[in-house]
Image (cartoon, rainbow, N blue to C red; front, side, top):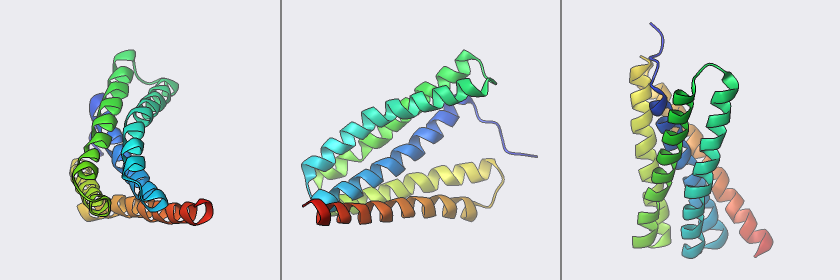
Length: 162
């Protein structure tokens, strides 16, 4: 038996949550190391929550249309669920930045993003009857690479343009 076929909205949610975690964490880590500015991080989170949610939604919309395999109802369900899940997920990262010191907020955000990725990866692995450790490990490894790359890029920007 192969992987389960998820409803359109579930595909959009899993895409939106994953993108929301990865892009927002990369942004938070990069802006913090590049600027050290709470204002820049807050502005970045709001910007990515809105602009990237629209971008991801349009991207998945066009991708689904291009495949030619689904009707308008499916396409719009994926589009809207991608937009809403990306928007809400990205906005959850604003809370630690508003209430904690910036350094602590970054660590709390990394942990929060990891929890979301682990839960989503676990659910995907279980539904596809794949080893949980492999799916979770793969997704956390990719997230870790993004975080490390963002840290180095932020450090480089600060050293080069500051």
